[in-house]
Length: 128
Image 1: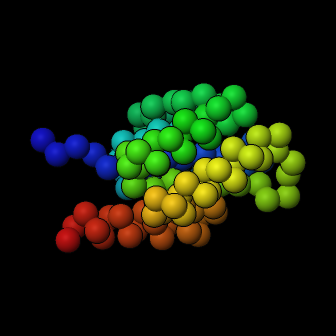
Image 2: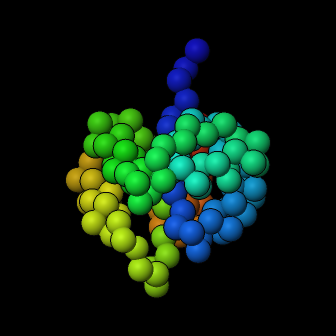
């Protein structure tokens, strides 16, 4: 049996409702992936019926855990709904996560429009 492709889902507090709406809209597509998420976001996503491997919350190290997975080649994409207008005490971790994605060529979406394109691209890639 072929192992599922792993993607990570992260959302800042102000973007969690937007992430949940996205998950509901693309529920069938997301079922094809192994999903990891930061703590609170992951718990909210499990309420939609998807299985999620929950890491620590972002401020407690979850962003760093997901960045480590990206650096180790374990992730195909990260859907990170950021709040660009909010203050985040763990901003260095956020910047590190984004840098790791650039260094290791991991697809990174920071809003629903690019998240949709990443999902469609991964789906198309798996069909070819």
